[in-house]
Length: 631
Image (cartoon, rainbow, N blue to C red; front, side, top):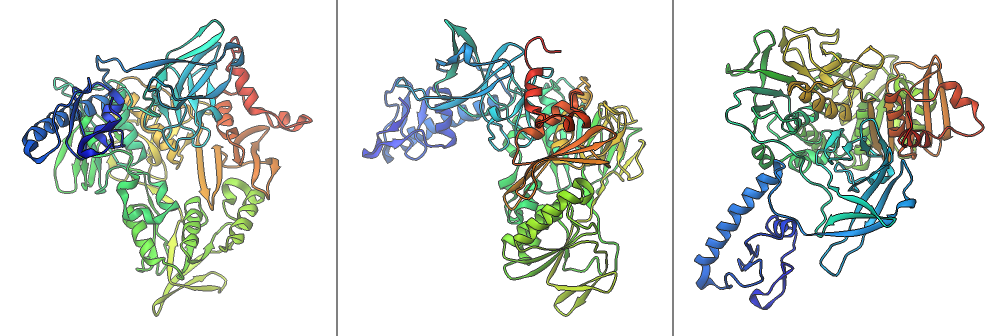
């Protein structure tokens, strides 16, 4: 009934992906549906509620105003996870024979369109610990197929094969990593040997997480200091965990929280930060989260639970999480502050790099970190002549080792990026309009622009009254609480105690920061849980994707399974007979499977990896764990 408008002698789609028509499509229950262009109104029984024409402009405006009010009410209701007392039209679909779905299986099932109006879609069908579950089929981060991921029955979640985001199989809630939206869940049953799933006729890939509303009688104030990945995840999760008091998210940037890793992969995004925003302002307003932008926190007094802004204003809090990330290090050498020497952290930084690094420009990237190499690849694609200077002999040597690093060096050089290893820059000098990058040993390079990527410094200098690590980061326990009651830390600024090893770790990864924001929020909401996630990292360079899981500051043995030159391999980083980290290329979802096995304490030993006649199947090991009766 809502498929088309017959006004003005034409059949205009009422299912165009506009906000108003998507509401009609999602709910199919609005009292009146107003055409987004003509203003024609239709009741849900199909009768005309208004006609097209300027002589009924007043009537049309009234109808539009009424519908807009309903739209706003429902948008907020959806954003805060309210369940309206209106049944969505559904259909029951046979998706498989029961015998076809083995214990531990994850299967993507296509839902065909139906004559009764049911649209095409897909579901994930999982059997974990003997029980069937049906959910949305795609990760809400970059729409990766969840059936190609893994599951873990102790947590009852499914893990994205690409970027380690995890969703509860029972509720669809995002519980880990970069996926901020929930995935839908569907009733599933077995009837006469058939697996039957009940799905909406209008299927959606994702939905808003279930959250609580703000309660005006709750007088508590929780602060989220920092607007990065950890900050937005913490603010989100506070409402998801049942906190009903005041939430204030504070960022010194003028932007809403955004997808920072996108900047190093595409510096042009600096000119359009809204395109990489993690949440829009309407979302924060719907959840009653106050977003304070462009204000720098000068100090946080943990003993007295008060923050002071640079302008002198003060704000007290009951609980707070510091999620301020880290600042790029400046080169501590003569010329390190010249105008042509740039760093990357913010959209403004990316915009400046994009403006200066145009086609034909000569660029020197100082530092062979992951960010530095991503920037080098980005600038090469923009048509720049790029040389990378690294202190290590090969890119990523400290993390991936020389053997894997050599493969990346050769790959970059095949793309036209020069790499100079063992380079220590001693000075950057202005040479007319150009720059001269001078190295120890007497070598020098002329260029138009220098971009540095030589590490970061945790942004925690403004915090007092807490225990800090040598690098200035905030020391926390397993639940991410600092030594000060009511104060938590998450992301690059946090050094946390690992529940598995007891060692202190600080991980500079986007995935970890997002997850730590969630865990910190649980602690703030009175539901502390140990941050037991295995660190996970990914990078994408010239279309090649690397996944790295675990944490190996050193290793005494490197085992390679696969073809290194073809960048299709699994690398095991071992120390004293134990696997400390795994890197993969072209082998999804081995990395996320390894991460779960490490978390569970079930990762094969070095001897087990070397002892068999064929490679150990990590996916099958995890699948067996997910079967009923497995301990």
